[in-house]
Every structure is written in structure tokens, then in C-alpha cells.
Image (cartoon, rainbow over all chains, first blue to last red; front, side, top):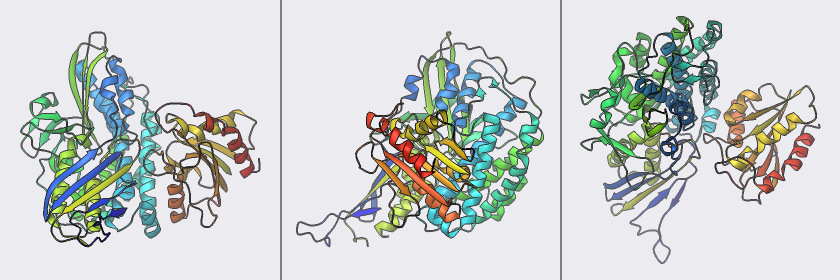
Length: 450
Length: 149
């Protein structure tokens, strides 16, 4: 972190009215982004989360490819949540082609997805987010102070990796998911071999909830409209209707009637808002608030013991919600393994046909939507992909405004840290390329900050 | 057990140096039975891979500002060593950071060395740039020397 303070012509820094603060080489967000906050006196006049990572043209180069290639191609968008990309793609294409994948095949997809939640949440909680609460600059410092917590998270992540490998064929960018089902389904013995480690992982996840519940949390309540999938009888992972705390309850085919993507000059990722312009938030906080009733008692009790009600609107407490979801994902995986019987065939036949359809699933960091239009030749005519971080950009900016507005006279160092922390609350995945965040905080007028 | 790790992403040009060297080693003269080789994309996997290993050599592309193809040979326990930062890693942690994490966790192998080659191009695509390609021979000799092979 470096702080540059513009100086007067004679070199004195005393009469500064404008302050620019820069943070670079921050390794705890995914992708290339920057942040600019302008303070006029005590008033925040500008907040921009700038995503300057070059566009990756996935939606463009999918055109002309066979539709059934989309799950594997789009999984390459992210090394942390490839299963989410595969699942949203197969959901869209199976819907488009009129295929139904249910029963044990659907359960197996849910099991695979649990592996991704375990990996991603374990990684984010300890490696990326917890250091913010404990005054550590990195997980290395955290490991020096609390090696047990870091070892526990690494082992949890590995348990998720193992699940992804056994069901998905390999740990990163699994290769076993296809339109219609899987290429190969595991034998029960392969899954039962995971039970012992997952049983450990369930206790470890409960310990994780207790660990993070003991952190200090800033007082901040946000009035986001929370949006997530919902499916009767289950906590949402692999699909469902799209619902919100604002009363929305739609089939995802109606998405464009309620939401609009728009380009803003400071980001190479499209923003997405409700049609009336309001931002919204997807992710663990949204899933939890909209689906608390679907959580098993084990998770509800863990949440209650951690001081959470059925809705959590403090963005900093997302780490507790993520830990509760970690318990859920491990417990759900154990339940799915216990009742697993191999499907009679690894996939149902799906014949491509002309048309267009949406597909969605709950990536660890929020709702991921895909839409494909394909021709009678099975080739993709157009593709749209709405990652959760793109959808959350506007709410993230609002969070930053709220955080800085709550204490505009704090030191720039403290404010900067709070802003970075506020970004990490939502586990943004800007991309999986390189990882630098540069933060600029410009302070105009008012009391100079220490 | 001794371990040679090629670290990097073959789809990011010179970042694929480590895996390329390891694959060449695997195809060459047979290695002693107590020497294992592996190619990794995610440096965090080192923690798992080097468990119970006495000596580990990591081959990785690095970026320190030196001319492309320059070899860096770093013994982790040399006091005052400043590691060149690995710039291309999947999720923000390079080999130096993972080694620091392992040290904090008490999981650092007794002997850990890095054979780094200065990369020129970490953009999308396969294949090494000429100066990095030319470093394969010297780097392979350095790996063999490090393990007394």
C-alpha cells in the first residue's frame, strides 16, 4: 500500500485539499479492478468500481460453436467456479431442447456443485476474508497467528476438491458434466470413500462458523434488494425460480422483463439493474435471506448460535453466512452420498433444436445466468452470460458509499482498509487472470485526514 | 522422497516453462526411484504435493526485471533472500507466498530450492519465447545439480 499526497509548489503537504490513496498488488480479490472514491468535505460525491480487465469475448466466440460445447468452453471462464458455468450452460441447453434431467442425475449434479461451494467458501473465508477482521495483511500472517484455522480451511478446501475430482473427473475445470447428464457416473464405493473426510469436514465447518462469529463486525445495515434462485424443498444450488426480497418471483425466462444489462464507461463488465434502475445483490446473503426456511436444522442452529437471524443485512457478516453455507454444502454432500444409487444411464439423450432459453444456478458468489439461442443446425447464434459479480457491481459501489459516508473523517488508511474489506465482503471474482486492485481515494476540502 | 515441481500455466506462454521442463525430464533418462515429478497450475497444491518430501525443487517462470531467459537459483533458507515475485498465478499466490505460508504452518520441506527463469511474455497462448526456450537446457542442468542427479 502506498499513500501519495499531492504537495504544494514549495513541497509542503500541509495545505492539501485533495488526497489520493493507492493500493496495488492486493492479492485477495480475483481479477483486475480499481476503485475511486471522491470525498467533498464529508460528502461522498463519486464512487466507481472500475473493472479494466480486458474483455474476454466468450459471448462472441461461442457464436458458431456447437451448443453442446458451451458447458466446457464457458467453464474456462473461472478456475474457482467452473461447475457453476457448466451447470448454468447445461440447464439452459436442456431447457431449450426440452430435456429433463432429474432423479439421481440431478442429485449427482447437486453433489458435484457442493464440492465447488466447499472449495470456494473455504478458500474465501480463511485465505481472502478472515485476514481483514484479524488485522492481518495476508493469510501468511494469519497462519503465523492461528495456524490451526488456516490448516482447517486448507483441508476443507481439499475435501471439496476431492468431491469435484470423483464426480467431475478432475479438481479444476471438471470434464465429466455434459448436456443430458454425465459422461460417466461414479460407483457408490467411490463416493462412500469420501464419507469419512466429509464427516470431519462437517465438524470443521461448524468450527469455522464459531470461529468467524467471534470476529468484530462494523455496524452497517444495507437495504439491498436481495435476489436469488429458489426451488421448493431445497436450498438453491442447481436451479429454480428467481425471487427477491422486493417480491419478485419469476421464471428465469422472464429475466429481461425485469432486469436490464447496461454498459458504464468505467467497467468492462456489464452492470445489471432492475428495469427501474435499482441495483440489487446476489450471493450468500441473498440466498440465505430468501431460503432460510429450506436450511436443515443443523445449519439453522449454527446460524442462530452465531447470532444470525433469518435475514442478515450487514455486508461484513457475509463471512458468517458463507460459513453456514459451508456447513450446509458438506452436510448436503453427505446426505446425497448416503442415498446415492447409480443412475441407470449416465445421460439422457438430448437432441439440439432451434430456439432460445435461459439457464441459471447459484455459483458460490451468486446467481449465474446463461442464455443461448441456437439454430436448427445446433450451432450457437447468440450467447449471454451474466456472472454474479457483474450483477453486483452497482450494489458494491453503494456499499462503498455507505462505508465511507458512515465515517468520512477517519484516516485515509483506515478508510482504505474498510473499502477493501467492503469489496471482499462480496467475494468478487473479476476474472481468473491476474489480481491487482488499485484504490484511489480523493479527498476534496474539509478536514485533512491523518 | 525428492520432488521436482514444474509450476505454471502452459496456456500463458512463458508461464508454461516449469511444466515444459518437467515433461522433458519425464521423457528423458529415467530418474531415481525416490525422485517424483509433477506439473502444477495452482501453487497452493504445493502444500499437499511436498508433504513428506526431504528436498523439493520448484521450476517456475518469474518476473524480476532481469533480461528474459535469466536463471535465478534460490535456496529458500538463505538469510536475506528476496524472492522474485511470480507474476502469473491463478489466484494471487505464487510459489514464494506458498512457501511463506508453509513456513508459518510448519510445513516447509527441509530443503527447498527455486529454479526460476525470467519470462518475457505471460499473455494468452502456448509456446515459450526464444530466450526462455533457450533456458531449458541450463535450467534442466540446474535442477539435476540441485538434487545431485
